[in-house]
Image (cartoon, rainbow, N blue to C red; front, side, top):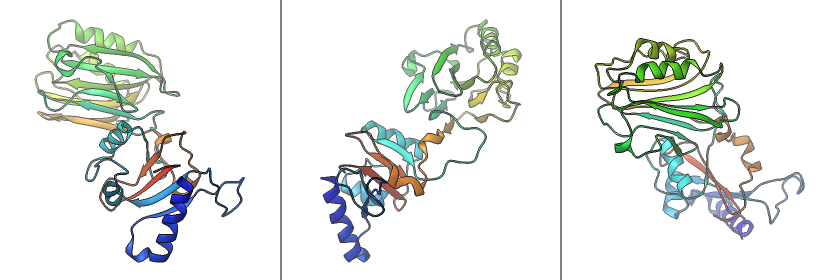
Length: 280
């Protein structure tokens, strides 16, 4: 049982702490009183990324970026969290949003929400080159709509893109990404429409240029989270404030039955990690 494992590991750590790199303890609850261990409470294993990988508790994530680690951890059915206080930023999303943009076929293009690809729904090679958008409710993160505009080969796509963006309500949360490049049919009106969501990049229709951004309707240009590059891919990664687990609250975390919470400070081998669950 998880409670027994936690007690054993803590005993080992307390008596031989200099030779081990892991500790375990039980969450303290109001029902159990300060310091009292409850058999049904979730155990918390505190270790490092290197040791957790060696023990088989997590997939191989050493040296990867946090968004890559999150996808690998979620693929195993665990809940990913960042072991840190939420950033004090004005731009916080209700859900994790990963936006990838390609230039001239480099890497992938797509918009992911909570690890699931939402746009494009087709595979990469069947998807049209140009701009892609996903609209979310700014409070709940519920998808409200998606659209693709083949600005590479459709003369009317730029005008339709501007019309789509201009029709969205004030405050709408949007993620946008280019696949392959902006395309020669991207219009000035479409670029102006993106500026209404806080985008400041001036995509050049003549270049194979990537462009990824997350913005809200009503932002001034430059306020969106944005990345672009010529002849190379770009991406914007935005974790929800709900994905952050403040260290002071770690003992109160309670995973769903049959699941674990994997909380990371980072994905370097010596970064601290908490594995929270009734079984490791």
